[in-house]
Length: 315
Image: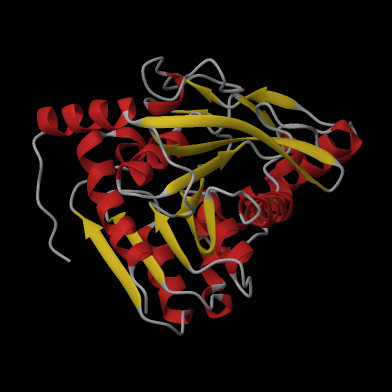
């Protein structure tokens, strides 16, 4: 698919116009005994007629006001209803069992996405026969598992997907020894009832999950007031032993992916597609970083165009 290249100024103007045309409604829904907070996005002045919908989920440690909001607004601009929410243990949503928070649990987050689809299908503003899922970064794997075999969902899209397996985990997290060490940290934290550290900090900062520059601690980007900026070390084992790159064969829905060789672990996409049995739309953008996919207007627009076209297809 060839996409037009927009200037940054033009894209910013389009983004501002789109924002002015979006209405939001705060809602709650239940999953496994907890109350989750969500937001329904609709075109301004919507007459109530059922719309095709997209459930949008974001990167690890994220809340709905970050990259999920950005893509939800883009989907509304393109004629969809959109839905975002905070996972259990994050943001405005209730806790995981035993009052646990800030654990990056693939199992729990997959369950929450399934519950979100069930809830969205009941909304009068949504056409229950045209519901789609859009997973960004870490939640791409959760989204795959939540839509596989799920009759409520038509199509799935993944933007900048973080899809790892054992080989990639070892490469990213210090080899087998490094992974074993983090799993030991995880088990000790879990035994202690949790160990909370900052999720993001500046380059070189110690004692944080992500001592990197960019998105998560910049106030005009990811460091929004709603962001918890917390990580529970008890989540390491579940994250490191979850291998979504090997789950391609599970997926039974039409798939579109937008990624870049300059973004995070593109080899995970290649591994996933080797196992996927369907026909996938793959758009690899040039020189787009992982954080660019979260909020850079030009790159978000290009990714959103691919997703909207994919979700609008009828075959």
